[in-house]
Amino acid sequence: MTKILFICLGNICRSPMAEAMFSHLAAEVGRSDEFEVASAAVSEEEWGNPIYPPAAAILRRHGIPYDAVRTARPMKKADYQYYDLIIAMDEANIRGIRRIAGDDPDGKVHLLLDYAGEHRNVADPWYTRDFDTAYNDILLGCRALLKALPHYS
Image: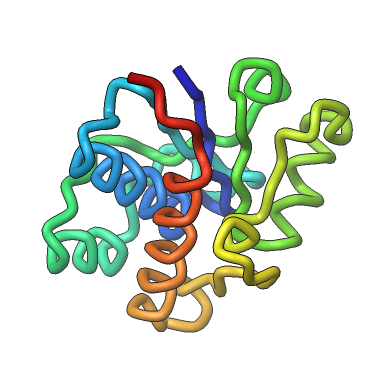
């Protein structure tokens, strides 16, 4: 089983969207049992808050189930050892992950859109207010990530 942790700044928009979207995509192709998927933040400012309502709304609009009772949590140093892949939404998140984990000696930390061949950030819709673009970028990255991961039958 591959354990994946999606990371963004506050864990209320991009990373919970990625968690839900990746899980949904894996389920659609019968691969749910191959993955353990979670999300966290590189900051503590949203700790305990639910998914941001516009992020939840766009997931609902696209028919993607999500855990409505989950709350934001900060990444812990132990997460680095536990998860096989730590997927960041932007370069600032990568710096935060390395600050928390103590660098990346095992090469687990990656930018989501690198899997789609596009080395760029998923813009934070908390600031841009553009949840459609964030959704499309996360979907692109999650599809590419799922395709890149070996299929175990």
